[in-house]
Image 1 (cartoon, rainbow, N blue to C red):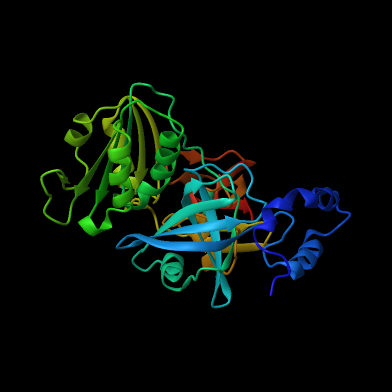
Image 2: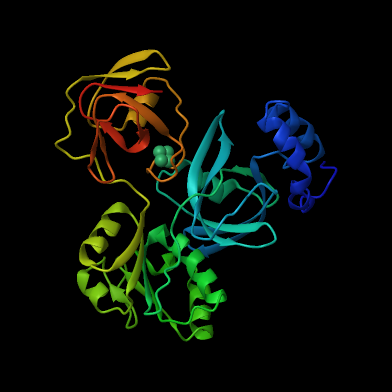
Length: 363
Ligand code: FES
């Protein structure tokens, strides 16, 4: 049993500053200090972010909202950013990136997890994560921010793309944003309208907010749009600044139709082109002293893993930067935008980099 309450973790973070300095200058080993601190409380660490689950709430048939209380190491986090969540499972460490739907001043954060067909980590958390459990998180990352526009903001989300936008929306409303806001959320079934009760309540509380839903799998009702994204949906809605979040195909279709200011975040990668070559090529992972036969049909991260390497990574979607390595020679294509990268010494995100011929990477 912990000797000190979890709520003290945040208050005590400043007390650890001298120890952090000693560890940064190699006078102390961080792992040794953490071992000592964790004897007093499992969430007390010098730098790692540990958080205790305080509440679980189903906000849609397939989405669970979590409230977590962080130790004092979550620094400068903002709603709308994303964090990596780690979960030990069957001798491995699963991880996935989730968006922050709220960041409170008292150290609590909120995020939401959607059930994914075959999703190893998300489904584990939905079904087996109890209140009181302590989890490890990465530092928050991401640049989505509320636009300064006074002419109105348009938010377009598909599926779990609602989560970062909800975080930004909650904060903007609480800070007194008064220009018109329209949120359009695309879901397959009506039961997947995440946070719908809260959004209805926000609409009655803030007259400048309009929320609409587009349903593709059920028959749409009078106040709903029908089907997947169509350009006509966009052109019928007010707003001069657009934020769009969802799967890659959705985000790409919306961007194509919008000429104004836009911020976009895609939660999935474009598929590797069907024309991608499976012809053999040489991959060298220099630090691992491993040379293997590869192809142009999957990412360097996938191919490294297939040959037994365990590169550091997080989101696997080109967002978190944790998998960044140096390209030593050869050419890779960035799956997010199709651009070729071939400068020796250039940093590349191996989760979204597909080799285009022989490649040597500092891994
Ligand atoms: S794993 Fe997140 S950018 Fe590659």
